[in-house]
Image (cartoon, rainbow, N blue to C red; front, side):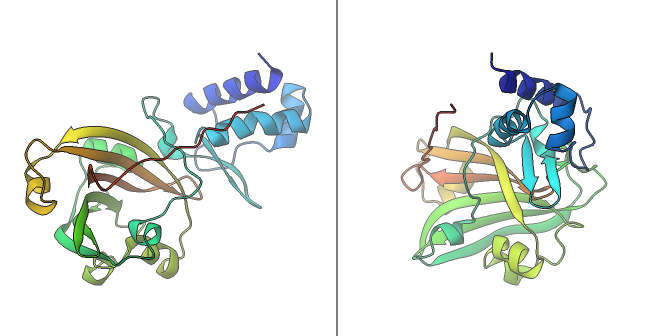
Length: 238
């Protein structure tokens, strides 16, 4: 095992064991290289591995932060270069929304854990049907903490929530953790996505986080099998 790989494993172990505060940057590359007795380039390569794995996020001018929602060891990550809402992914098409459910509630234990909040913190619970050029594509079930994202209303829900976060609230969306699985259509999909009872559904379980590592969204997107595909690019690390 190369030295930078061993260092990366040790720092990952520290992250999992909460040795570093999650609300502050980890020690800088110079401090860590002195601690581990290596060059700054070796330390950069070690941290690069953890950035690629979604455990760390670099914020220019502020340091390297732990992605809070990545501390769950059972989580499977699909890492992409960008995180975009459906409206931004399909800029050449007309994307519209039908609100099926919208209310504020206290979260269940699992929802609170994924959002790194307690169960006394209210969340939006949103269910939307997203249509592309008038055709149903996906049902989104979304939870967002109300203190972090104030002001969501009917107008926002019928547009792009991500645009509201970026343009109106000035938040910076950094990345996400996703689990992708195949499911069977349920009553909601049969009604709104025009599926048959035995049609497969592609479900994406998603935790989105901001540039300080704080989760802002926990959602389930249930896609028609004929309207969604996942493309991954694997790059060899030298």
